[in-house]
Image (cartoon, rainbow, N blue to C red; front, side, top):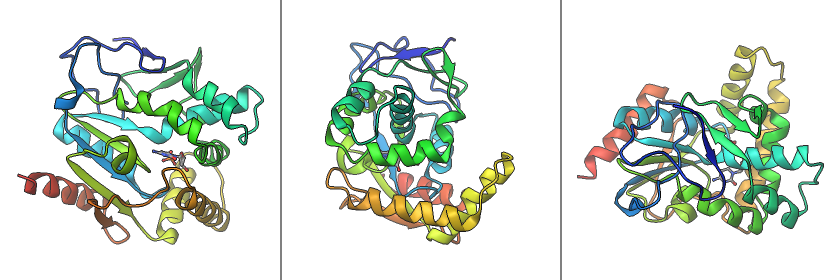
Length: 254
Ligand code: DC
């Protein structure tokens, strides 16, 4: 299979094609397929709470698709950076977000135009830019249809900040995954060191607190647990234990 181009609401693979592997990002609903039949597990939470890892593992276990909505905000931020735009120009950044020439490959690689940006969008500067553009309503609106287009049978596990509150308010199961700021900074630090990227724990902790505050205090789609979300604190849990709790909640749903 080749990468699938994803203009806003663009065409996708044939109906009935297999769910992508863990780590791959699900692709849009093919025209004519009724997305309402596909259940959604929404996993929201603050930065570095481990929701991406947990969501991918849950998706892989259930054989479902996976949406990393933060990647779309990161792609829009990178697109804005490359276009020489400031993060504080909502209309211009929204235009970029609405026309992202993005392609998700089944192996998890992400391209923006001809460039493989899988690693570039993980840079701290791009993550901070994503948090800054995410405060703008027009940018969020521009990404809404694209996010919803990832919902397809047999189901979707979506991670982000507003999956359960705004994007998929009818999600069958909603989780709000959190952990102490110190343990999140520590996890992020270890990840970066493993990748050979140097970073100090104190600056990561400060960045993370700034980003948490911005994500939680913005007026549009702030980072808050949905009223019907299960709040799961993973500070003292391993990845396996956290995945097991999410799957148990899913099974208990009946
Ligand atoms: O999950 P992440 O760190 O890749 O997300 C990067 C930023 O994108 C995050 O700081 C806020 C924004 N974001 C958002 O506002 N809503 C989402 N559903 C996902 C991410």
